[in-house]
Length: 264
Image 1 (cartoon, rainbow, N blue to C red):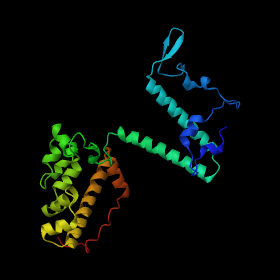
Image 2: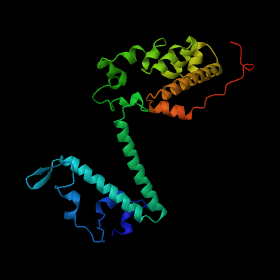
Image 3: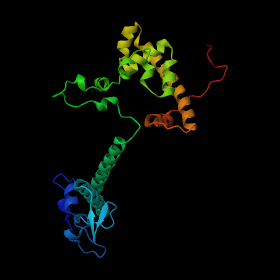
Image 4: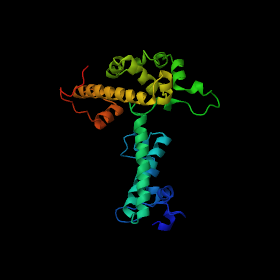
């Protein structure tokens, strides 16, 4: 067995990577398994679906990188399982929790990479890093879209066509049917990302008035959006992550009695 002193560095944190690489494996009788008898050290795997019969032999036809990836994954899972069984102190359990957190983050990152729905990934995440070869302006998503012949995001970034920035029909209808004053608030604060102080100076109003109108626009959009998403969910349509989170967190306001309603 590996002494516990080798699992921790000077600061008391576990060196999980070293533990995984040097951890011995044992069979059901408690005998240590030699390295040459480990299943991942052999290129012949009778139970592998990626193996091919050639005469009396079974040859693994997978690429070397794929085999190494599978081997590393198997060793990592076995090491985490043994760390969980051997953990006794609070620091050891904390190291185990950190290892599982990293595994979960890696798994969720891979799932987001192959996710068809956009979810909460911003468009700016597609910008190219650096700028040593290409200028920063040429690495922006809008410029790259124009080079591909996609002009929608560039042409529709205006007050009267911003509803065409989305292909979701319910969102398009909500934005298109807003009043002109509310469209202006939504465009400058939501798309151009103006501050309320800057928009107040532009419109010649007080910042308090801008905030009040902004909250009114937000409440009306949320109310219409909740009704549209509820109808889509009842019809069995697929919702993306943001829409699902909105339905889960949004609390519809209570309807007022007719006597309390304000005159139109």
